[in-house]
Amino acid sequence: MAGTTPGTPRVLRAMNDRAALDLLLEHGPLSRTRIGKLTGLSKPTASQLLARLEAAGLVVATGTAAGRPGPNAQLYAVNASAAHVAGLDVNAQRIVAAVADVTGETVGEFELPTPGRRADSVVRQVADALDGAVKDAGLTRSDVHRLVIGTPGAFDPGTGRLRYASHLPGWHSPTLLDELAAFLPMPVGYENDVNLVAVAEQRLGAARGHEDFVLLWNEEGLGAALVINGRLHRGFTGGAGEVGFLPVPGAPLVRQVTKANSGGFQELAGAQVLARLARELGIDDEAVRGPGTHHEIAAGLVGRAAESVERGEGGPYGRLLDLFATGLATGLASMLAVLDPEVVVLSGELISRGGEPLRSRVAAELAELAASRPRLIAGEVTHRPVLRGALESALATTRDEVFDTSR
Image 1 (cartoon, rainbow, N blue to C red):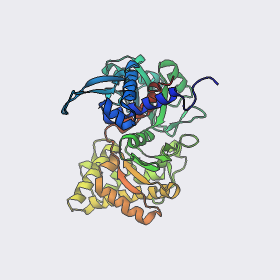
Image 2 (image 1 turned 45 degrees about the vertical axis):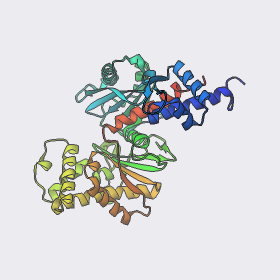
Image 3 (image 1 turned 180 degrees about the vertical axis):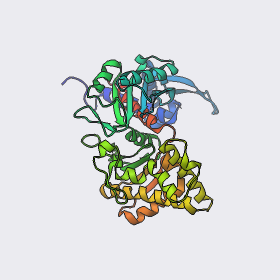
């Protein structure tokens, strides 16, 4: 049988190589002795491993470790320029692009405003955003090994069309994915934006070490990501986690939800409801009147409400936070009854602005509404989490390819 088989020296060397590279990514520069101790390899074997990886362009000598008796030890690090990946975070107003080296460090960013752009210019928008980040990194398109694009909704694996995101103009053509594949020189992956936030939290943030969790996201829209046995659950058409469409008590029953691009949970706890609730409670200040989008106004209201509660004032702002928490817990209770996750990660600006006062109220409501008792934790990846998730997703595949020394 052609090729290598498990247990051969070549495969074992490749496994040791990958273990060493992962340790260097985790710990930063290490000496030969330290790598040997962490991998369990002898000094001669560790030396051969490092020589092999250095010759392959995967590690570089990066200085020496001082402070111990005897000669200073040579340190080795992953060669950051061994590969580069790119990520795009797309919404109706802009595309944010970034490039990262193989260690995960962001080396270039670019933001392309897109409001009012022609719907037929999506391929050009993607290319312009990518090129802006590539140029900022001092690279060219051909230096990018893989691109991952995050969008609201999801591309149906059966039809290739974007679903659950009618507000994203130009992204619904059945030929769009083929056009992008033909125009761009690197492999391109596509993922739901909230799923990418979960990827970022799983790899770098609050969900590290957790195999079963739900991430609830509330920003411009309300959505969720579901991770089961360590893997994203996307559903048959990619629509798993589109919980904004979830019918819930306390909100009118929304029909033809895809045309409305909304549903019961969105109407109960989405950004658009906060200003109405504030007016009903007699809150009439600049936080309600704007200017700003629904999301910006809602974030300001939640932030003020949390600050009011922390000062012990309560009042209408405290009541606003109570109502918002009840809305969030109502939808979450339905999800918990089906999924029973280990933890729930609360993320997105509307939730993060509420801080501990909001989380504690959501937890108290869930104690009465849900049978299971998952731990509620705050998301930790707060700077461009969709973009960070896109880069991490691209890095996972690229590292598997570039770090495979068995080929």
